[in-house]
Amino acid sequence: MTTASATQVCFEDITEGMEIPAKSFGPVESTDLVRFCSAWETYSLLHTYQKFCLEQGHRDVVINGPFKQAVIINWLDNWAGDDGFLKSMSIQHRVFDFHDDVFTATGVVTKTYEVDGFGYVNIDLKLTNQRGEVSCPGIATVVLPKRGGPPAPVEYAPPAEYVELLQKLASGAERIADLKDGQGIGEFIPEKARNTIGMRGYANEWPEPLDRATIRRFADATFEWKRAYRDEEFAKSRYGALISPPLTVLRVPINEWGMMGESAVPHIELAGRSRGGGNAGQDAEWFKPVKLGDTITQVAYLADLVERTGRSGPMVIVYGETVYINQHGELVAKTRQGTLRQLSAE
Amino acid sequence: MTTENKDEPRTYVTEEVKAQIGKEGPPSTWPEGLERSTLRRYVNATEDQNPLYRDEEHAKNSRYGGLIAPPFWLASHPLATGQRVTEVLHMRREDGPLPGSTPRVQIEGLNRGVNGGSEIEWFRPVYLDDLLTYKSRIGRFEERMGRNGPMVISYTETEFRNQRGELVAIMTGSGIRMT
Image (cartoon, rainbow over all chains, first blue to last red; front, side, top):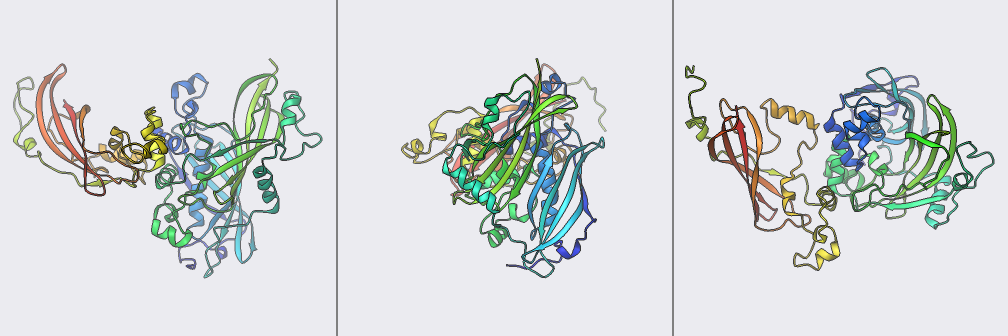
C-alpha cells in the first residue's frame, strides 16, 4: 500500500471548527440534467420535460434530489482525495431547485476523532442555491489518513445491527422489525398502512454486472475525476479493480427494460387525497466500493410512517431502509430514505 | 474584397472548398468495447424488441453465437467523455478542437448547417466486447438552389472498424450548408 502523498489532505490538517474549501457547481444546464437522468436511469417528467413542470406550477425543470447528492458527494469525495474515504452522508431536501440554478457546497468540521489509527472527521454541510436558499442541509463523516501513514481503508465492517438487518432481509422473513407503540399514528395513516411498518419489500437486482460503460456514465454525470473511477491501472493497484463513484450503488431499481422497477419499499395506501410528494432526503453509509463486475441486490423494508403538518398542510413521510448487497453477500451500503406524501382531507 | 452583386449567381464550391476533399480527421476510438449496459440502454431507447440484442441465450443459439448490437448503434459514439457536454458544444461553436474526429467543412458565405441524412453500408455485425474505431474524411460537394436560397451539400464518409481491423460499416453523412 502506498502512503499518503504530499497533496493528500491528512488528519493532522484538520481542526474542529475549520471550514472545508467550498465548491460551486452550475449553472445546471439541460445537458447536465439529461446526462444525469441517463446515468441514474430515471425518466420522470419532473426532471426532463419543461412543459410538464410549468403545468405543475414550477418555474422550470426541477433538478433531481440525487443530482444534488451527486454534487455534494463529488465535493466531499474529492476533498477526501485518493487516500480518504467518504464513510457516510445524511442530507435532507428542503426546497426545489431548477434548471439554470447554481449550487455552492460548504461545510464546517464539527468533530475529529481517531478509530484504529485513522482520522474521522464529522462535517456539518450545506448545499445552497444562488437565491441563498439552503437546498440540502446535512452531515457527513470522512475518514482521512494520518500524515506518513497508510491510506484510509476502503473496506469497513458494518455495525452488528446492520448485520442483523441484512440477515433478516436475506432470510426472506416478512416481518423485519416490530411495530412499536405510538408508531405510525395519524389521521391519514389507515390501520393497514400502519401494520405494514416493519414489513419487507421487494428485492431488486441490477440488470447486469457493473461494467466500464456504467462507471464512465456515472463518473461523467457526476463530474468525477478521481483516478479510482477513471484510471484502471491506479484502481487495480489500490482496489483490485476499477470502482464506481459512491452514488452508483444507490441508484434506483431498474429492470431489464430500463423502466423503474417496483420500489424496493412496500407500497402503502394512505387516506385522504394526494396533493403531490417528493424526495425528503437520504442517510447513506458506505462499507466498501462497488467494483467492476459486481452485481448489487437491494432489499428494503418499510421503516416508519410519520405524519406532520408542514407549511403547505398535512403530509406523511414514508421512511424506507435499504441494504445493498454484492454477489458475495457482503453489505456494500445501507440507506434510510424519506418520501413525502402531501395529503388533504378531501 | 468582393464587389459582386449579392443577387448575382455565384459558386460557393470554390477551388479552396474543393481542396478540402479527402481531408481526414484523426481516428477516434470508443471509450470501451460494446458492453451489456450500453446495449440494454440502446435497445430500450430505440424500443427494439429483437431478442438477438436482448436475450443472451437466444443470441448464443443464433448464427451470431452471441449478443450483437442493432445496426445503427455504431452511429452513437459518445460525445464529451470526461467533460461537461456544454463545454464541448461551446468548443464546436467556437471553432476550437473537435472532440470527435469529423473534419470541419469550411464554406465561405454558408454558415448555417443542418443534418441532411445518412447512408450506411454494413459489412459485419458489432459483437459484445467489440471495440470500434472510426475515421472520417470529406467526400464531395454538391451545389443546389433550394427554396430558401443557395445551398451546398457536403458528404462525409466515415469508416468503422473493430479491434481486429475488420471493416464494420461505411457511413456517408450529408450536411446541408445554407446562407
